[in-house]
Amino acid sequence: MLSTLHSDVVIGLAGTNNEDINKRMYEERKTYGGIPDPLSAYLTIRGLKTLGLRMERHNRNAMELAKFLSQHKKVKKVYYPGLEDFEYYNIAKKVLRGFGGMLSFEPISDCSKKLIRSLNIAIPAPSLGGVETLVTLPRETSHASLSADELKRMRIPEGLVRVSVGIEDIEDLIEDFNNALSVC
Image 1 (tube, helix red, strand yellow):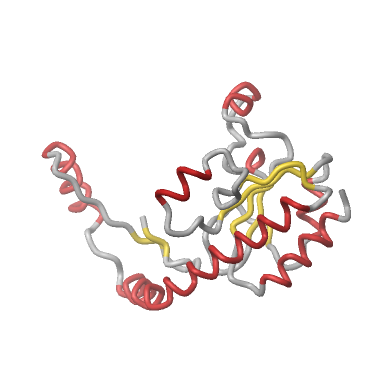
Image 2 (tube, rainbow, N blue to C red):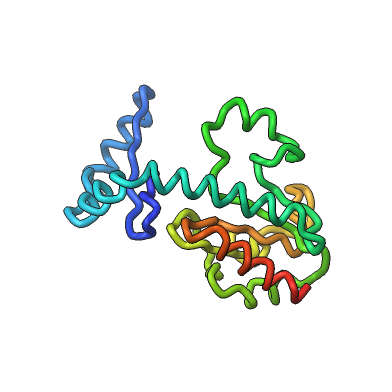
């Protein structure tokens, strides 16, 4: 799947050398169609033209926000592959060209819902990878159907905040999170 990060189109590509899967994909294509509609094709081409620039900004903003949050006295832990204390940092450094625009963090107290409501730039939304910064609580969105045991096994703590960092001015984002953390 490829999203061109404008939050206006999602498009995909599939390929295999497995004959059984190939036959199934052929049947699905006959049923659902094999090409995007003209608007989706246009939006994809438009988005690809600036994708590199936007990804650079996503990477840079996420790194700066992760550094800020990791040093904030009201943040217990930050999960971001670009931070040297992240448990998979050495692997990420070897296999990634950038560390991405996604991060998660745990505030020190049970204030995640108030924190999200206090943000002015970052938007509460259960989505990923747009030009705007989005925040969500995985336990209430993407992982809401999991049991307490499953959440514990997957190491998804209570109050974890997931951030899909956008391309806004980083100083504005940091100020927004700093102000929101004051409710904790």
